[in-house]
Length: 76
Image (cartoon, rainbow, N blue to C red):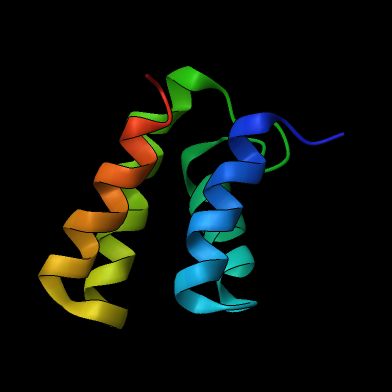
């Protein structure tokens, strides 16, 4: 059973990167000590920042900011 936040983050990232999105989430979660299947509300700010940094490579600064904001908004 995956958390609601895990599902939403995965949806955001797979919309941008396809299947690679899942891998990117797992990698960033591992680096941050977060269970990718059980992302909690309090994990979202640091995960948003990490995923935003990754997105600079794939989509540039604007895309990175957009992704970071989308993920941060999940906490509200």
